[in-house]
Structure formats: C-alpha cells, structure tokens
Amino acid sequence: MKRILLMLFCLLSAAGHAAIENFDAATWAHHEPLAVQVLTDDLVISVDTGASMKGVLNPNALQPGFDRARPTQKVVIEPRNKPYIDLFSLNGTDLFKMPEPRLKVEGFRGGVVVASRTIGPLWDATNKNGVTTTFSSFKGLERIEISSDVADVANSDVFFFLESVGYEVSDTVTPTPTPTPIPEKQKDDNPSLFGGFWFGLLAMMGSLVWRKRRQRLS
Image (cartoon, rainbow, N blue to C red; front, side):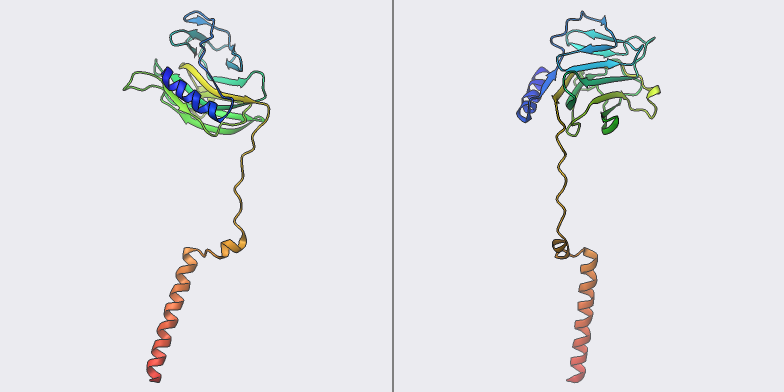
C-alpha cells in the first residue's frame, strides 16, 4: 500500500504542488477518542457535532463513527490555510462492513455542489485490504463531504478507516476550459447523415428519370 501511495504522490506532484496526508505525523495513541475536529498541516477534518471519531495506528488512520452510541453521518474535509482544495485521492478501509458499503463524495463551492461521485465498497475481498479511489474533477472546492450513499443524509452511518487524502490547496480556482464552438461555415460543410441520405436518394431518382427519358428519345 505504501508503494502505491508513493507512486500516486509522484504522479500528483508532477502535475502541481500536491500532497498526501497519511497521518504519519499523528500524535494520537492507538484507539484514542478524538474531538469532532482534527487539524493537519493543510486540512481540517471533522464529523458532525455529537458524533464520534478516533485515531488508530499501524496503519495510521482516522475512524469516524467508532462509538455506536454516537454515530457519524458525514466526514467533512476543508482546507486549513487556503480557500480552495483539489481532491485527487481517498484511501479508506471498510473493515467492519458498513450497512451501506458505498460512499457519496460531494465537493462544494459557494455553498453549491459542484462535484459529486459515488465510491466503494472500500474493501478488497481478494487482497483483504482497503481501496484507493482517484478523482479528476474535484477541483477548486471549499468543502468536501463524505456520507453514506443514501437519499437523506440523516440515514447516513459511516465508520470506515480514512487512511490517506491526496490533495492540493490553492488561493484561486483554476477555470475549466470551455469547448471552442464550431464555425457556421464548417458546420455547413459537414451535412448530417439524414440530410446526406435524402440528397443521395433524390440524385439517384433524377438519374433514373433522365435515363428513361433518353431511352424514349432514342
């Protein structure tokens, strides 16, 4: 797993000042209950008010919702010192089999969802380990929310191990390039299949009429 994370980090670094938070610098003890908010160098990771979250070691990870009396509906990831975050990857392990094994990941900007994806299950039954999911369109976000893939977040119940987050923080939002429109003249030079079919049919009928007319004249 560490080799995969290293390869992923190299790929992300080539594209920009990316980083992977794998909680190697965590100071918590094994199975230590934590507050509802955890700070890293660049990230703020939190759960709902009144929910539970703990830290574990080997591998280092956060586990939201470990206390069944204080379930967690969603995990929130926000940039700590910059206004925006790009999400590149999430590595998680659903060791205890959540009731809904899939997770809904949503990215917010200006209070509006601008990116959404369903991931999971976070368990590789063949290799008996967690799963790394990569993201390509989660750019320029102010907030990332992770919950169960359910219609109502009130029915969400997450208690997976969050083992790493691949990300990049920035001061500005990189604009998404818009497609260049096709000039009108170029559109006319490329008739549709429907138009080409009728044009060919009319040409063939005209040719047959002309042949019959020539035969009568001869």
